[in-house]
Image (tube, rainbow, N blue to C red; front, side, top):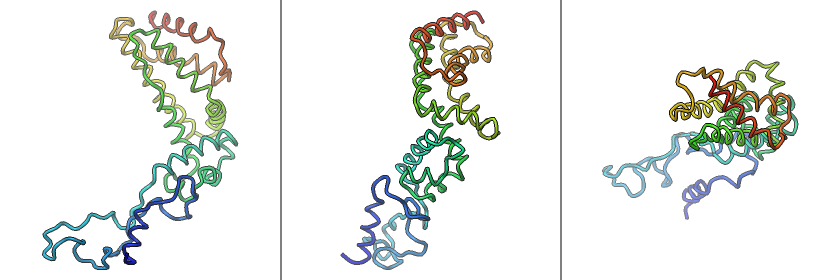
Amino acid sequence: MTDAEAVEATRAAGAGPVGAAEPRGAADSVGPAAGATDPAGSAGPAKGGSAGGDSAPRRRAPAGAAVLREDVTQAIRAAVLQELAAVGYARTSIEGVARRAGVGKTAVYRRWRGKLHLVLDIVSALAVEGLPAPDTGSLETDLRLLYEFTSRALRHPVASQIIPDLQAEAARNPEIDEALRKAVRSGQESVALRILAAAVERGELRRGLDEDIALDLITGPLYWRTVILRQPRLPKSHLPTLTRATTAALKSL
């Protein structure tokens, strides 16, 4: 094997296992340096091509282009939630997140500008993902499933610690306040609106009902109890009773 072939083999092997610390300043994955020649040491046609250029040259990554590894991104996302739950937003730091993720600080800064943008992006994403839109064929059972999913998510130890902390920060930081509002609206309201639309199509609710009031009725009570009053452990009868009351209230609009 020539020296050039050995270099190519090393590049093909990729980075080490997830969690290995990244060298500071190094990209997750980097293309060939600017001005690099092909493995044969020549800037001419790729190996196997004819001198006349009948074969197209081998495609190569753009010079110096960094490829952000998804496993590193996911490790950082998990580390942010762990750090927030452990020390709160005020004491969360890029250094602490990087240490938990097993990466260098530059791996974090390559993806987010700073702590605020990192936390807002991840919290917003979590509010949207993982919340299914029930479609059982009945308004009441759709609402019951929505409440069960939401209640289970809010009972999670990480969420129960992070959300109140971020709410306190939101009172002092307009950016966090706006992001939390958008996160709740984009997640909860999109699902609730689909439930309402399906109920209207089935004839369970009248067309033209006040959607703002309907959304308040659906999303407000559970968040009030679990997030504001911080009582995530609800009585066994709470969700069934809340479901029946919300269904009746929506039908009265």
